[in-house]
Structure formats: structure tokens, C-alpha cells
Length: 234
Image 1 (tube, rainbow, N blue to C red):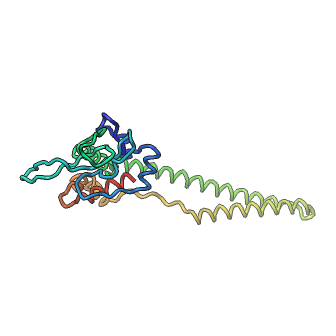
Image 2 (cartoon, one colour):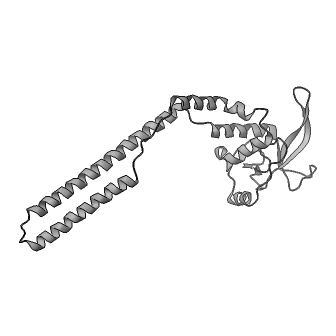
Image 3 (spheres, helix red, strand yellow):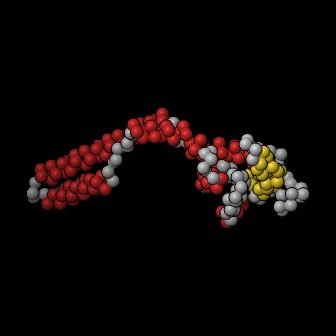
């Protein structure tokens, strides 16, 4: 995930949660940063698009929340060391940036609308029926070829030895091809697609409705939220 100088709120390829240059990607693969103990959602995985280095996560300021609790506020910075006095090319408060990424994560995790699922099932049924008709037509054609080969062989006079041999080979080949089709049909049966049951539709709708509140539930720890982000990003 990369940020450009002067564009701290710019998310590159947001659906993929930011895919930077190949070098940065390889570096991320080689080194997995710890998730950290604080609330910063992107600690260890957000990068500067210009320098290709991970942003430091610093908890330098404080904020009073509802109820009077005072908490440290995270900030992402691009600088070559953890010295806050050093010049840096960008800095952004994690609270604002994390909200954007959280929305992207929820969008990635939210199941498709029921209407889209129904359309997908209908399309799968059409494809299944087309394949079934194709297989049935292939078997009927194979049956017809076998019957024709057998009839031609039986109608050929016995004294036509060489012709009978050739016709028998053709008949035998037709039988083998039909057997291969039937064997393939047995080994790879067409399983009709199944739509959602009524109770599954209710459960899915419930999940879609309550997913955002579940992710923000007080009992969901910052570490759990970070693992969700890293899982989706992977």
C-alpha cells in the first residue's frame, strides 16, 4: 500500500488495498512486519509510494475521547528513522486513513447482494443445462454410429473377407468411442447447481446488515481488526 508525497489520502488500487512496485511487493513478502499493540490499523503494511519504504507508526499526540479517557493518537510518517525531529516527506493521522481502509475491507468482505447471487445461480443452471444437452447429443450420436457400423457389417456378405474385416474394425472403434464417452460421463457427472435455501438467505442478509457493526464491536480487539486487513490484503 503506497502513499504519494502531497497526496496522503490517495489510495492506489484501493480494492486490492494498494499494490506498489514489484520491489516493494518483494520486500513485503520477504519481511512480515508485526501488527503492533496500538490501534493503528495499517501498522507495518502501509508504504510511501515515492520512497517505497514502510511508514513509521508513531503515537506522539493525545486525544480525549467521550467519557474522558485520554488516548494516544497514531500517525503514519515516511522518514528514514524514528526520530520525530527528522524531516519527513509525508505524515497522516491514522484515524482518518484507517477509516478509508476499513470501508474498503468491509466492502471486500460484504457478500454480494441476494439478487446477484440469484442471477449467478440462474446462469449456472443455464450452463449446466447446455452441458447436459451437449453430452446427451454426443451419446446419441455415438449410439447412431455404433448402430450404423453394426448394420453395415451384418449386411456385408461373408465371402467379402477384407471388407468384413475393415467394417468390423470400424464397428469395434465405434464401440470403444461410445464406451469412452459413457465412462467419462460416469467419472465426471454433471452436478446441478443449488440455490440458497430460505434459512440461508436469512442468515446471509443478517450477515450483510450487521457486518460493519460486528467489526467495530468493542470486544473486537485492534489486533483482530489488523489480522482481518492483512488477510484481505493478502
